[in-house]
Every structure is written in C-alpha cells, then in structure tokens.
Length: 290
Image (tube, rainbow, N blue to C red; front, side, top):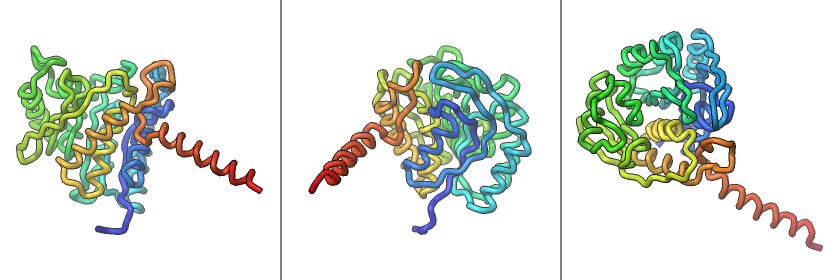
C-alpha cells in the first residue's frame, strides 16, 4: 500500500449552512482519512429551511479549479454533486476529461434539496443523462432521482419492492454509468441496492432513523463511497461502508442546529465535544495542582 495520502476531488456547490454540498463532502473525505479538494460549481445561500439564492461559477473557473488540482496533487477519486445548469454540466465534462484513465467517478444526481428547493433546471436534466452518466463509474440516486433519470415508472413509489428497484437500477445503468446504487432513504425498505458492472445485484440493508437529522445524507454517502474507492476498496465493500457511515451520520445528526432538517454528523461531533470537555477539565485540574 502506498504511503501517499489519497486525494478526492469534489465537484459540487457550496452550502452556506455547512450541511450539504462541498462542506459535507470535505467532512466525509476527512472522516475516511483522505485529503479533500474542490472544484466549486456554484454558490448557494442556504440554511436548514430554504435555499434562497443560487449563483453559478463560470465554466472556465470550474475547469481551471479541477485542472490545477489534477496537475499538482493528483486525484484518486471524484465525487460530483449539484451541477445545476447546462453550462455547468459541459464544464464538468471537460474537467473529467482531464483525469487519467481509471480514476473512479461517483455521481450523486442532486435534483432537490432536503428543504424542497429544486437544484437542477429542467433543461439540464437531459444533459446530465447524456453527458455525465456515460463518464460515471457509479451513480447514487435515491428512488425519486432514479425515477426522474429514467423518465418515471408508473406505479412505483416509496413501497417499491427490491425487484422494482432492481428494474429501475437497470434502466439507469442503460443510460451509461458502469454501476448504480439506488439508496434507500426514500423507500419504506431502507436497503440500498447496488447493481454492478458485472450484473451482480447486492442488497445493502441498514436501519432507518426517522428522528435523525438528514440534511447532507446523500452528499455524505456519495463522498464516503468516493473516498473508499480512492483507498482501494472494491465497489461492493465501498458501498457497504458508505451505507453504514451515512446511516450513522443521520442517527447522530445535529438536531439542535437550525430550525429545519439538521445536518448529518459524519465527524461525530458530540463524542468529540465530550472528549474535549474531559481533556479541558483534566487540564484545569493539572494547572490548579500545587
């Protein structure tokens, strides 16, 4: 195993509330022991309750951010999040073409924020399918996103069976990615379903935490997946770790942050606070000792 620290590149938008987007990706990369880098495609004025403004970054700047990272640091895996517009998608495709062959690309097809705000324009959806999916190693839609990618399937909703989800996953894979993970967060059955390039179907069961804080859960899942691929995991193992970490991050999410859906906690901040408090107390006692 190389001593070099694996480098992950997030191509996504900034979330000013710190719960999703670039901010969530960097935390997830760090939690897995990888170095996170970014090509920011847009700025959002966003809280736990709303997205009030979105401003895209220029296509040339998107490509240049990626180029300098790839040229200097090298990139072992890429995660793509919110892309928003057709111009952004074209720039992201150009950035991906700068990567060496074989670098895994994880695409989280972000269409709607946890607050309900629409994050992908209608005219950009076709470009995402036609331009980015064929460049993708694994795409990670939730069930509504998977249905949107394939154009909808009558009679499929949250109570979809595993067989239904497998059929939808095959429809998504037919659009060009090597593999598909349909995540279980929007299903009655919380399992993720992985359809590999070799046509294996792997169910990844996990608990549902309805009282957790889920803002950024999709970003955390896809970024953890990218980090595990950068570390050398095969896809089934990477997918299992991503499912586990995403679930734990929701379970321990920061319910006391914001008035809406609180952010997930991939860094286990509550535990870190307790440790810090113990260390501070121990330090204070040491200072008071004669």
